Image (tube, rainbow, N blue to C red):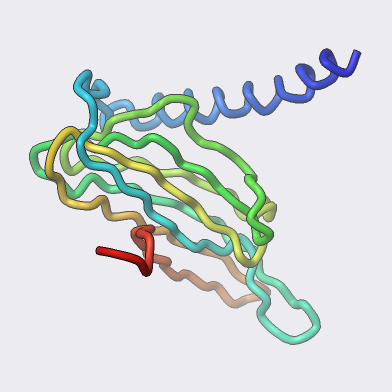
Length: 172
Protein backbone atom coordinates (compact mmCIF):
# COMPACT_ATOMS: atom_id res chain seq x y z
CA UNK A 1 0.00 0.00 0.00
CA UNK A 2 2.86 2.39 0.65
CA UNK A 3 3.93 2.10 -2.99
CA UNK A 4 0.46 3.03 -4.24
CA UNK A 5 0.29 6.07 -1.93
CA UNK A 6 3.68 7.26 -3.20
CA UNK A 7 2.50 7.01 -6.80
CA UNK A 8 -0.71 8.89 -6.05
CA UNK A 9 1.20 11.65 -4.27
CA UNK A 10 3.71 11.98 -7.13
CA UNK A 11 1.06 12.05 -9.85
CA UNK A 12 -0.32 15.56 -9.14
CA UNK A 13 3.20 17.03 -9.25
CA UNK A 14 3.96 15.35 -12.57
CA UNK A 15 0.61 16.51 -14.00
CA UNK A 16 1.27 20.04 -12.72
CA UNK A 17 4.72 20.04 -14.32
CA UNK A 18 3.28 18.82 -17.62
CA UNK A 19 0.62 21.55 -17.55
CA UNK A 20 3.28 24.22 -16.87
CA UNK A 21 5.40 22.95 -19.77
CA UNK A 22 2.36 22.71 -22.08
CA UNK A 23 1.35 26.26 -21.15
CA UNK A 24 4.88 27.52 -21.80
CA UNK A 25 5.14 25.84 -25.20
CA UNK A 26 1.65 27.00 -26.26
CA UNK A 27 2.02 30.58 -25.04
CA UNK A 28 5.47 31.06 -26.55
CA UNK A 29 5.26 28.76 -29.58
CA UNK A 30 6.48 31.54 -31.89
CA UNK A 31 9.62 31.96 -29.71
CA UNK A 32 10.52 28.27 -29.80
CA UNK A 33 12.28 26.06 -32.31
CA UNK A 34 13.22 22.38 -32.40
CA UNK A 35 15.78 21.31 -29.82
CA UNK A 36 19.01 20.65 -31.79
CA UNK A 37 19.81 16.97 -32.32
CA UNK A 38 23.54 17.45 -31.79
CA UNK A 39 24.92 17.34 -28.26
CA UNK A 40 25.39 20.70 -26.51
CA UNK A 41 28.99 21.85 -26.14
CA UNK A 42 28.27 24.87 -23.92
CA UNK A 43 26.24 24.83 -20.70
CA UNK A 44 25.45 27.26 -17.95
CA UNK A 45 23.10 28.12 -15.13
CA UNK A 46 21.55 31.37 -13.95
CA UNK A 47 20.28 32.23 -10.46
CA UNK A 48 17.59 34.92 -10.21
CA UNK A 49 16.48 36.24 -6.81
CA UNK A 50 12.77 37.17 -6.83
CA UNK A 51 10.32 38.43 -4.24
CA UNK A 52 6.70 37.27 -4.14
CA UNK A 53 6.39 39.12 -0.80
CA UNK A 54 8.38 41.99 0.68
CA UNK A 55 8.31 43.23 4.27
CA UNK A 56 7.44 46.94 4.03
CA UNK A 57 7.54 47.97 7.71
CA UNK A 58 8.32 46.56 11.15
CA UNK A 59 5.63 44.25 12.45
CA UNK A 60 5.52 42.13 9.28
CA UNK A 61 3.52 44.52 7.09
CA UNK A 62 4.00 42.76 3.76
CA UNK A 63 3.32 43.69 0.17
CA UNK A 64 2.71 40.84 -2.25
CA UNK A 65 4.12 41.04 -5.77
CA UNK A 66 3.56 39.35 -9.08
CA UNK A 67 6.73 38.05 -10.69
CA UNK A 68 7.46 37.89 -14.40
CA UNK A 69 10.63 35.93 -15.14
CA UNK A 70 11.96 36.65 -18.65
CA UNK A 71 14.55 34.47 -20.36
CA UNK A 72 16.07 36.11 -23.46
CA UNK A 73 18.25 34.37 -26.02
CA UNK A 74 20.93 37.02 -26.60
CA UNK A 75 22.35 35.14 -29.60
CA UNK A 76 21.74 36.38 -33.10
CA UNK A 77 22.55 33.01 -34.68
CA UNK A 78 22.09 30.01 -32.37
CA UNK A 79 19.13 28.52 -30.53
CA UNK A 80 19.34 28.58 -26.74
CA UNK A 81 18.34 25.30 -25.09
CA UNK A 82 16.55 25.71 -21.76
CA UNK A 83 16.88 22.54 -19.70
CA UNK A 84 15.41 23.61 -16.36
CA UNK A 85 13.33 26.45 -14.93
CA UNK A 86 12.84 25.75 -11.23
CA UNK A 87 11.18 28.04 -8.69
CA UNK A 88 12.36 27.78 -5.06
CA UNK A 89 11.03 29.30 -1.83
CA UNK A 90 12.82 31.22 0.93
CA UNK A 91 13.89 27.96 2.61
CA UNK A 92 15.33 26.57 -0.65
CA UNK A 93 12.52 24.06 -1.20
CA UNK A 94 11.32 23.47 -4.75
CA UNK A 95 7.99 25.22 -5.29
CA UNK A 96 7.49 24.38 -8.96
CA UNK A 97 9.41 22.89 -11.88
CA UNK A 98 8.33 24.70 -15.04
CA UNK A 99 9.79 22.30 -17.63
CA UNK A 100 9.29 18.58 -18.09
CA UNK A 101 11.52 18.50 -21.19
CA UNK A 102 14.06 20.91 -22.71
CA UNK A 103 12.89 23.66 -25.06
CA UNK A 104 14.93 25.76 -27.51
CA UNK A 105 14.54 29.49 -28.03
CA UNK A 106 15.07 30.98 -31.46
CA UNK A 107 17.79 33.63 -31.80
CA UNK A 108 16.72 36.84 -29.98
CA UNK A 109 13.52 35.14 -28.75
CA UNK A 110 12.10 35.34 -25.22
CA UNK A 111 9.95 33.19 -22.95
CA UNK A 112 8.38 34.16 -19.64
CA UNK A 113 7.14 32.53 -16.47
CA UNK A 114 4.45 34.44 -14.54
CA UNK A 115 3.80 34.06 -10.81
CA UNK A 116 0.57 35.86 -9.82
CA UNK A 117 0.39 38.25 -6.88
CA UNK A 118 -1.76 35.85 -4.86
CA UNK A 119 0.84 33.07 -5.19
CA UNK A 120 3.06 33.85 -2.20
CA UNK A 121 4.57 30.35 -1.92
CA UNK A 122 8.02 31.71 -2.72
CA UNK A 123 8.06 34.22 0.12
CA UNK A 124 10.56 37.00 0.71
CA UNK A 125 13.60 35.05 -0.50
CA UNK A 126 12.32 33.15 -3.51
CA UNK A 127 14.48 32.39 -6.53
CA UNK A 128 14.57 30.78 -9.93
CA UNK A 129 17.36 28.60 -11.31
CA UNK A 130 17.61 28.24 -15.08
CA UNK A 131 19.90 25.65 -16.70
CA UNK A 132 20.75 26.35 -20.34
CA UNK A 133 22.89 24.88 -23.11
CA UNK A 134 23.91 25.47 -26.73
CA UNK A 135 25.54 23.51 -29.53
CA UNK A 136 28.34 26.03 -29.97
CA UNK A 137 29.67 29.37 -28.80
CA UNK A 138 26.79 31.61 -27.75
CA UNK A 139 26.15 34.82 -25.84
CA UNK A 140 24.99 34.10 -22.29
CA UNK A 141 21.22 34.46 -21.95
CA UNK A 142 19.77 37.57 -20.36
CA UNK A 143 17.50 36.58 -17.47
CA UNK A 144 15.57 39.12 -15.41
CA UNK A 145 12.56 39.17 -13.13
CA UNK A 146 10.09 42.04 -12.87
CA UNK A 147 8.16 42.32 -9.61
CA UNK A 148 5.00 44.47 -9.53
CA UNK A 149 2.73 45.02 -6.55
CA UNK A 150 1.61 47.39 -3.87
CA UNK A 151 0.22 48.03 -0.47
CA UNK A 152 -2.60 50.49 0.11
CA UNK A 153 -2.32 53.31 -2.42
CA UNK A 154 1.39 52.68 -3.01
CA UNK A 155 2.48 50.72 -6.06
CA UNK A 156 5.96 49.38 -6.63
CA UNK A 157 7.90 47.77 -9.45
CA UNK A 158 11.48 46.61 -9.51
CA UNK A 159 13.76 44.33 -11.49
CA UNK A 160 16.13 41.61 -10.32
CA UNK A 161 18.86 40.51 -12.71
CA UNK A 162 19.99 36.92 -13.06
CA UNK A 163 23.52 35.99 -12.14
CA UNK A 164 25.56 33.18 -13.70
CA UNK A 165 26.20 30.37 -11.25
CA UNK A 166 29.87 29.49 -11.42
CA UNK A 167 32.02 27.58 -8.99
CA UNK A 168 34.12 29.92 -6.87
CA UNK A 169 37.56 29.21 -5.46
CA UNK A 170 39.86 26.44 -6.60
CA UNK A 171 41.63 26.44 -9.96
CA UNK A 172 40.48 28.48 -12.91
